[in-house]
Amino acid sequence: MKILVTGADGQVGWELQRSLISLGTVMAVSRAHCDLMRPEAVRALLRDMQPEVIVNAAAYTDVERAEDEEAAATTVNGTSVGLMADEAKRLRALLVHYSTDYVFDGAKSSAYLETDLPRPLSAYGRSKLAGETAIESEGGDYLIMRTSWVYSARRNNFVRAILQRARKAEALRVVDDQHGTPNWARTIAQATGQIVQRALAERRSDEFYSGIYHLTASGATNRYEFARAILAVVTSLEPDTFATAQIIAVTTADHLMRAVRPKNSQLDGSRLTARFKVAMPDWGPELRLCLQELARIDAIHPR
Image (cartoon, rainbow, N blue to C red; front, side, top):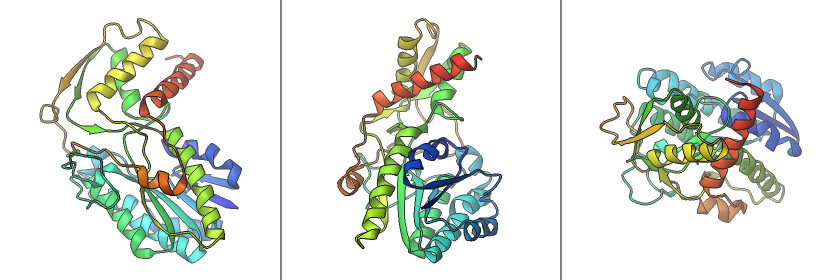
């Protein structure tokens, strides 16, 4: 079984290389070998590698920059994803693709279901929705996994940004009116491994069907409380580390950003659990596990 993982240097892509290894030969490629800004090169790569499973963790993820580079974001998140779906169908491969909570407008007062109508507010959200639409249009065997607020001990993300600013004793202004669920990249990758294994079993018994699913931890919070939780956990691991750090709650209107974020991006993951029997944990304990790992990494590689 040949499994192709794109975006190997990203948060989820890095973790997938471990979570999928028990299922077959994992061929992990980074942007240097699979640049989604060059759609035809993506097609050529797939024809050369001939994978039986494709897990696409590559994406244009700079939400602010996408406002100036929507065409580039759409090429990466939409056009190339469509070509990937076309080639997956030709190869009769299973395509697993990650999408985002940003396809919704955040106006709903409860968690979003897969059946809720997408209405993205930002260029990034529109580009990710373009990828979803392209996959559905191509058909074939696919699973689209929407997730949210992804973080890890590596790469740039909200958790690392909060810690970096706190180390500089900066006053942290964090919005308290954006609600959602943090998701550790490792948990996403481990769940993906279980999902792929079950999906392959379904295909062997001719019971597989394609669809969109919400892959998310349980529970919800807002950005401000998420930041407070990050510092609280680190302080419990390293007392007095951030004794002088201040977190100030502000509204989205106070925190000037070009890209409009959904006020509520909670995702209901019950549909995924029902089909794939994947029990997603609460986000709080997962955050602690990630920060424990980050503390070990920092001990090995001091700042």
